[in-house]
Length: 114
Image 1 (cartoon, rainbow, N blue to C red):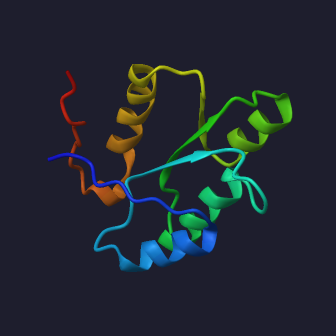
Image 2: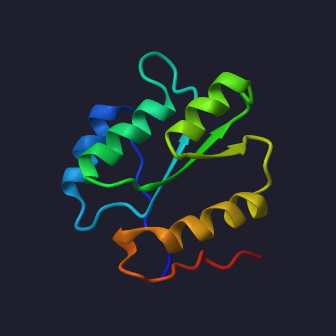
């Protein structure tokens, strides 16, 4: 079993994608700065509201200002620097997947890489 990734370019699009899924997401990955409009923290909170529970989330950002880190921490969102390696990102994501109720207790394993 691997991952099934879906993407959305806005909160409205994420809500439409969520409505089309058979199961809620196990993990949300979002950049902090999404361009014009709401940021990644707002997007994560919107997805969580649609799902009805705090979906595990990782915010990927190069902005490590105290204010942004405080906002993410207050929203129970883990942060990963955009300079973080793929292995570092995987180490951060794996425990979050194990904690999520949507996974039904299953442990997802990323596809093997060469």
